[in-house]
Amino acid sequence: MTGKLRNKWLRLYECAGRIGELAPWEIFDEGDKFAYIWRAKNKAFYFSFISESAGRYGIACYDGTENYARARKRLTAPDNKREPTFALQNAYVCLWGDREDLTTPTYELIKELGFSFRGKGAWLYFQRYETGYEPVLPNERDLDLMIEVFENLCMMVRAVRDGAVDPQFDRGLTLTRWYDAKDGLYYTHPFQVPEPTAPKLEVRVQKGPLFDDLLKAPAGSSVWDLDWSYLPKLVKGDDGRWMFPILLLCVEEKSGLVLFSDMLEPSQNAVRAVAKSLCPTMAKFGRPASISVCDGELKTVVEDICRKTGVKLSVKKRLPALEEVRNELINTL
Image (tube, rainbow, N blue to C red; front, side):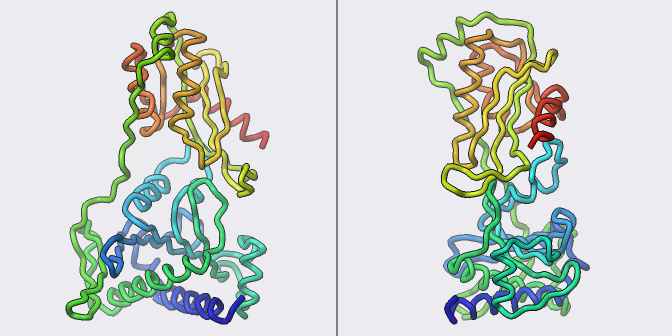
């Protein structure tokens, strides 16, 4: 690597090391919210001091409220689908892990930088996560971003450790840091920030020949279970990237008969795939009396189809018949 790139890596390692020395996991919970406002004030970065969700100490940085909200929702929800939950986030992450956690490129980087970590939980490394894909080493542009945001996070943690700032997390406040160009200074204060939320999907069925076929299809008495989930197995996609494929699955609840299944890449439009699979199946086998889902986003995707075709839509905590089929598939991976 070039000397310039090496210096950036060393600077990031130094910064993360200083944060680690402050032992933030002793005083902060994963849900405590930290935010850094970018100098141009056109975006905000959120941080989480992760521990239990990763099985090791670490720091996750999220570009924007949507990425933060989606990650926190996944990491705190029960994993009934056996998904690779930690990999399903868009984040810049540093972890203090074990030697066996490292990929070959990460291990080679550590050695090239001259570090000699020893023992469990001592191997500090960095990854860029993209939902549905294998984590990768940050590129140089990522390093520039991570250096700025992690250095400002370090200042926030130090301010709390030194007693200069009370973050008031118990009151639901967000510890926020920003740069004031007028004063030429950085400020760190807790604020009441609206809880970050992910935008809701809105899906509408357009009238046309396929919709007419759905209305003509006979109404039956069966109940269908429908779900989508990331499989906990890395496979190489068409673009050469290693990914966790999305399984789209629909089974007849009483018999466990698979009505349709499909494997999607994370880059594919899963919402469109649901309609493309569900509508022809209803036209072929007839409209079920009810469709059951256990996923809030999937409910939004299919509720307009159900409403316009007279099919009842139920939201359940678990779908045992579908889970049995999915678990059989996972166990064969």
